[in-house]
Image (cartoon, rainbow, N blue to C red):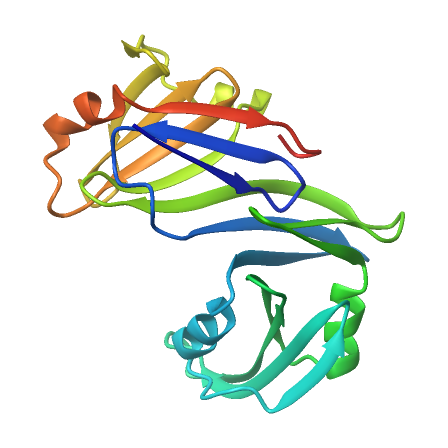
Length: 233
C-alpha cells in the first residue's frame, strides 16, 4: 500500500492511499478573482513552466527576475486562435522555487500586469507543494483542485466535497466502496468516466486508454482519500 500527500494551492492537504503506483507528479489548480477578472494559477513540479510554455507554442523565457524568494520567468509569443485565426500575444509567467513552480498564462499582458496578478497572493513553498494566500482583501479564491495521473487507472481530478459538487451527482444510488460511493457516466464522445463521492472530496476518474472501464471499481476499492481542508475545500 502506498501513501502520498500533496499540498493544494489554497492551503489544504490531500492524502491518497492505494495499492497502486502513486509516484507520478501532481498539479494543483486554483482560480482567483481580482478586480472583476478571473485568473488561473497552476502549481506543479519545478519544470512545469517549461511544459506550459511548450504546450502553448512559446519557445522559451525572455525575462528572468528574482521574486518572492524564487525566480520569476516570463515568456511571450504570438499564437493564433485555431478557430478564428486572430493572433494574440500569450504570456506565460512561471515562478520557480526550490522544488515546485507556480504558473499562470495571460493574454496581451505586460510585465507589470504579471506582477499585479502574482502580487495579489503570497506564495508559500512547503515540502509537499505550493500554497498561496491572499495578499490583499480584494482577492477571492474561487475553487481548487488536484490533477494526478495514476498508471493502470487513469487521470484523477480531485476537488472538495462542496454543496455544489454534491448537487451534480446523479439521482440514482452508486456502488458502495470503502472510500465512498462510485458513479459511472459517459462523456459527450461516449467515453466512460467515474465519480467517487468520498467523505470530504470528489474524485473524477478518466480511465486511461489501456484501462478497462469494468476494472475501475475494483482498482478504486483500495483507494482512500483524506483532505485537511483549506479555504476552498
